[in-house]
Image 1 (cartoon, rainbow, N blue to C red):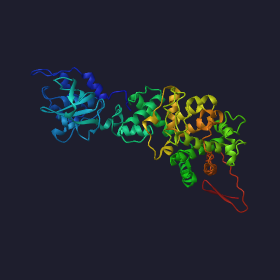
Image 2: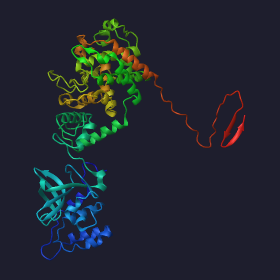
Image 3: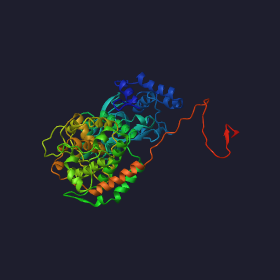
Image 4: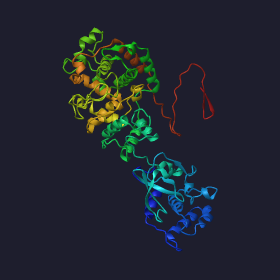
Length: 515
């Protein structure tokens, strides 16, 4: 596939021929006449038609186009009648040859009307209300000329080169299917309209990808988006689709969905669904003994100045929830507290951006996401920095679950600064479970990071614990796939042990063996 920074081969051929001029009078420019001969040699069935071109005073824009396509290995348009063949400029608007585009891209075929008939040429760029095009018979020469957009009847890309179609540059104000494609890749509603929300997410992604955050989607940004798509397709959230669905069903049956959090109201169902699934992943990670899960699940420590569970020990005790022993109960209670923290900090909105009234204006201190955690939290635990690399490599973090039914806004999606801090801000909203794990570790090591925890505004809800207990039960009940035993290679001896109380007849390679 042609890289987006390259030009199509037929445009390269046209550029190489720029400067060829029609010979005045009865003489002919042999280079123009040779084009017909080359087309005939390549496509013998077109030889008779090519032979009709006998003087360069005959309009030759279509001939030049056919030659460039031929040299690029693309069959020129060649329909049943003269007006369906390549010398007729408007014949190039033919669905059997090419697909119409909504917007021009370098090298697309531009079919237009003009005084005395039609014209066919190749698009190079745009200047105001005109297209700058390169083609033959433009002032009796191959050159670049300016044509009004309103004279164009079709922008065409060869069907046989569909895989090489470069994507156009997008920016605020752009519309179309490619905008919707971009929006889908970046995890925002795909309405095909590049507005303020899309620009904010593009800038946030560009900063995360360590590109210039200008909001313009050019070749480098498209390449980074393609890479993001590939990483998403190759990765996974950590739970099977069936298990995710079962967890969502548990959430729907929980009284927690109707609970009115103080000053916040009911939690978005998407938030509860997402947090329940994130907890499911944490359970599996504790099963595996991953250090980050072990750290989140450690018994409450004696230092209530750093450990949020210790700071809240009396509140947990009131609900009959004990955190004095390391393990699943303590991990679950941490997520109970985290669910409540998310409601205080963001009302359960995954796309919540930084507090613009705060003075934390570096990418390291800028708050982001559900829990308004900033990247400087990483200093409290060696288990946090590797999460950034892990989730950048596989950004699956239950975004569709956390966002269902919600519409983000530009202010929330925007990020601040550059470097790893900017990458963190993007991932906190693009992969919410990543943000949950960073926050969960931080709550055990640096609880003063969050004002609502310090002020004891976080509500410990017993229904949340009951829900997560049910999630834990079905997660741990799901069978772990066991790989099959390898089949011995042909020629090796296979040993089979059989224990029975009756007669056994074994057939090996069609031969019965009595035992």
